[in-house]
Image 1 (cartoon, rainbow, N blue to C red):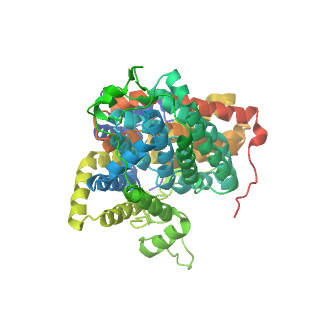
Image 2: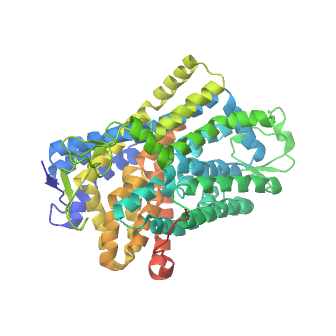
Length: 589
């Protein structure tokens, strides 16, 4: 069976676009408007996508069903497994009492909530994004902030906003690798171009993050720290992406920003310590030497803290032991992401990773099993691609080299080193699994929806609507990447969906394809905070399942506004600073 995608079944592009958008309208309408539980929203969205694909776009039922199943299988192993393992490690840290020491060690650096969110949500979250990606930063950093005393809503929403600028290089640079493969453009040029767009947002997002929490005056009180965080991360991001490689951009940026910020906070303190209004009762501090101002502007004196507990001080060795699980996690995900190690593990353990053809040559294309009835059965056509191109569908069951397995092994090793018995480890894992079960279902169905959208061509229909914007395409093409991430929950998937379309359209309009393909990835990062998958992970990790609609309504305007800023930056590169678009770069070996 072979089927070619149809992009305008009604003969009116605006009507075809509206119908193609129905799955998104159903998904976010139920999530934000009717406050339906996310796993039910994901199921409804997936069913709508399948129905629209079959009824209106004439996709064969068999292909729609196989696309959905392929997406669910991908979501379980590639994404849900990462989040589950990351939360498991967090639960082990809590179970052994080490998380309390970690929390106190951060509180010992600064009790100011504005500075804590910069350290944990932005700096630490960026490091985890670079190492693991796919929702792990929101899960880990969100749980961490709750341990520090943030309310669950604040922890979830602030981490969604923070997990933006680093996303283009998540999981050891996977989005950039995918973009280069899809666009057939030099990875070094694409990597450098993204590294000339996003450092500007890396300087903006920390300020935006603090301003989301407090008023203008309270934000400017910690402006020196905001500048240290933003510029240390942004400059490292620019340098590494332009002069080294695409693998360790976020990891190095996260490390440099953490070290720079902690060192700076040893030399500089804000004039006033800012706390949430609920902190006086829920997260007490030692009597301050400077006035403490809450979010309503009320100042507290030392006498206000009579009878409250104080932040404990722990020996350095005990603090290092408490941080050990996350150090082990970082090491494992870093090793698991290195191409040579991943390749060796895959060749030894992954079924069908390498298939030999009858002539003795290795089968080209992505590794894995051919998905029955789906692999190469669907063709993309012009104008999405230059000539009819079959869509590959191969599932590599990389059970050992999967990032989630690395996280899981890190959790097991950490638990054993902290004195947990195998029985206790198993009991804790069961507790994590039960707590995350609805999130796993939601993630899986979200990927099922995304894959039906991809293989049916609904994504291309939506993308083609953006190509009708003419001279303003650099701005709206950036939002094409935003749409891709909002649909799929992944910058990697967005690049796979729209990378080729960006190249074709930009060439037709006389715009540099390196810029627009990079803009797809750079704009996509701002859609990360509104995709249902990320919101589901955030609510599951912070134990507030049911508040997904409230969080979506809170972050959506931040997402659109930041996406518009990226679009303006891309417009400036297209028409004012085009000489700074890189061509012919090579990485330092």
